[in-house]
Length: 304
Ligand code: CP
Ligand code: NVA
Image 1 (tube, rainbow, N blue to C red):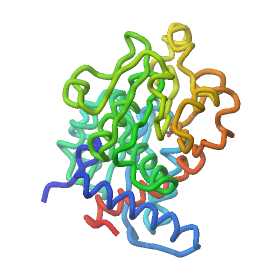
Image 2 (image 1 turned 180 degrees about the vertical axis):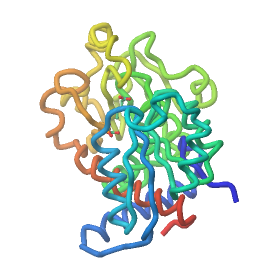
Image 3 (image 1 turned 90 degrees about the vertical axis):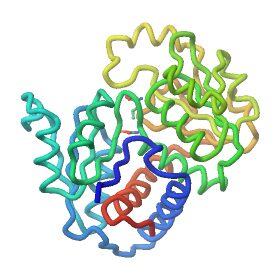
């Protein structure tokens, strides 16, 4: 049987995503209660990181161990991937020895090519185009605080980047509307906008996007790989900051999320992480639980 992959949120149906998020909440409670779970005993996850990471690496590695399995960190610096071995050859070999592969890389095409040649499930742990694992944690976090996100308005303030693209997919899958406030020239991908135009409204003024919204989200102005653009982006995004004053135009119960790492004084004001609306630490912890649910789903083909 061909393996299931998780390269974007569209690789799962809405029902599967909802069940996965529910299972993640169960795993959170179960783990916090101190219960031991070994559903992935003797299973191995290979983790290929071509970009830096704190949350993604720690959550996948800890998650595998907590489920009785193990995770192996592979970097291009010390594997043949960094010396030009074709992606397809690497995929055939690595996937013949492990139970799942997680990849964080630049071009989205790299995870697609790896998945096409892999015998085991492949998980996109961030590409230049998408960050679907973060959306599992964000959707779980919203549900744990406010219940279903169906019918809500979510405001994305900032760059039309990989996180924004995954929010667009989430808007379609979880049935909410996304307002994107970004400067001209930093809009989300045109093809994605064409497909999901009825789910997304691009605006220039952050206050217009945030007005009445139930969730405000942002991300760094310069993503990994865009370090050379930092100065130009600081100028372009100067007025695209989530602050208590922007939160005050949102719904009174609105939540604030950020995938982290955060740059205080840039995309968020210095006091935003501690604002009463902020659920960023809960959101970060949920990477662990959401991905444990994802690993069980992909490796064992079951939800719960
Ligand atoms: N949010 C997120 O993916 O964080 P890391 O880059 O630390 O993995
Ligand atoms: N957009 C950011 C997300 C980091 C988790 C980046 O790609 O660097």
